[in-house]
Image 1: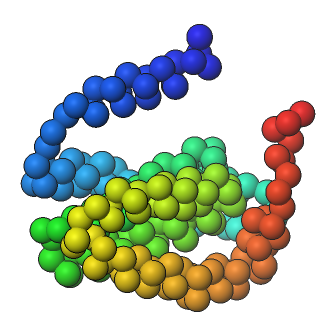
Image 2 (image 1 turned 30 degrees about the vertical axis):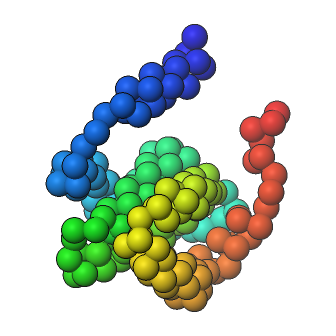
Length: 186
């Protein structure tokens, strides 16, 4: 039953929330309520990395950059925060300054997600962000902002990725180029 409780909870939540209607102000408040705890976890992770004595990057998940917690769980949590910040930046009634800050937060959290060396977080964010595009394309204002998404992707690939590869001594590329299950299949 423990293996089915997660999917069952998600199914019940999906059915409930599919009938719930909220306005943009309520959506903005809801997204902020979810983003603030992610900010505190991010700050804790930055502190953990800044005060680490032996920060070595290998080809495996990194417990130091995940604050001593499970790298997969921290990576997934940060990916959820990235997705919510990305969706927050897509809201029609926020200022351009707030939108830019939200995009910078996405970039920062994607970097932290990658530094956990857990691949699942990056995959979760990319898959979820791609899945959101058809829904966002239904409104004209979102179609015009698709260029911002392209700029976000370009920044991540041209600035963030080389920076992270440099910091990790190329170990990040080694980790993400592996397609094995890292012992999970055993």
